[in-house]
Length: 102
Image (cartoon, rainbow, N blue to C red):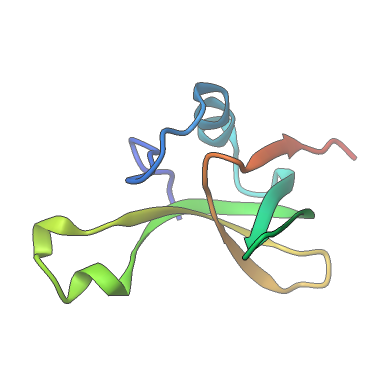
């Protein structure tokens, strides 16, 4: 899995620092990802960690049945959790990443 030339969100601008960190990651780097989750009026943060595998984009299914040129793409970070589970997280403007040195 390779890192795309550009890393951007179609809905919100990602911080330059976030893009630079994501572009610098190599497969196997240990990362810690913190995201804000919101459901209705409730909001909380959650953190997960694992070995970085790569970045690519997910074209959302809602827009693919509309005008093809109107796709909304979501940048996805793929990693392996400590228990071996393959996991992926959609990146948004509130996502924070930290490289963890063992």
